[in-house]
Image (cartoon, rainbow, N blue to C red; front, side):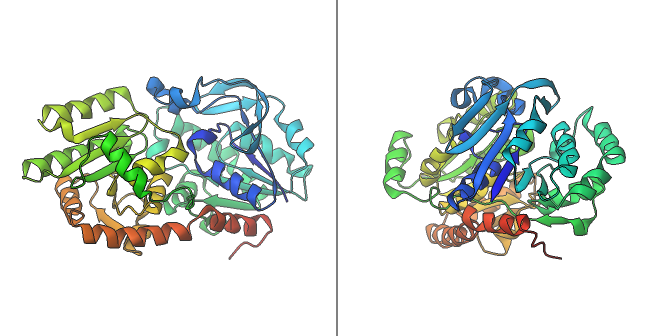
Length: 396
């Protein structure tokens, strides 16, 4: 099967669903290509936090192999908000002669251009996927643009889509309310993880804990992802300080990721001015395939607001997790006994859930459940769900 993934911004070094899905399909023998821009997502360069991993935001255009994936990077005629106009998009699509076109964003110039090719590619399956959430959609210009999109373009996409995919219930609800897509037209396929790469490594655990001056008795709560307000890493910092003040001293907090400099500065100030600064470790982002080393030295993961693929990757490393009741990934934690759900924004409740994981036996038992859940969501399994979609096997 010839599968063409189309996405405006593609950063395989730091992971994301489109990278892992493409890799899994290649391993299964499909001919896979990604068409994208010569640019990385602007949100990743706020404060230049990811520059050390990705380099410059604007790369060269051309044909490359990146992380084992065939990638065609097209020049950009213009960029507006988080949308780009790719030069020569249509001709590159037709040249590839895809059996499937999988577009990883619904509301974009690229999507509207791809839809118009349906008349020329009648035997090609057109799949549109959306990961947008209500929190991430807010902005001065964004909501009015969504309204325009819904009025003029939603019906066209709906009529020409062979499948519309969401990865969470919130993504699905977003498309229903913002784009006007009927619920029965949207299928949910959850995010996955690379359960082979993301595993607990005891040797690395010992080495990294020595490196960061973490004793065997210390219990490390970690957060990995963007350190920005809507992700809520500051809530973890506040909760840890409350624990220290209550007399619990064998806890450390590890935060890894690209940041909003102002927000990171504020939570670092809170940590260090509390008198417990030595118990906090703030690290810059690391390549996705290196994250398992840091999860291995941790004991539990905390995602105070929005969850992401990183949560599942941590679970794959036997980490019990704590997430918010508004994280829209609660079924994975609640139904499988992989962690705890706390009331979002409630520091006292988060402290209580963290205290539940101070017991080693509890952590180990829940961590085993987390690993079992992650294995069921390995990308090899998730890609089979997409394969059914590509072949027209859509569940009613």
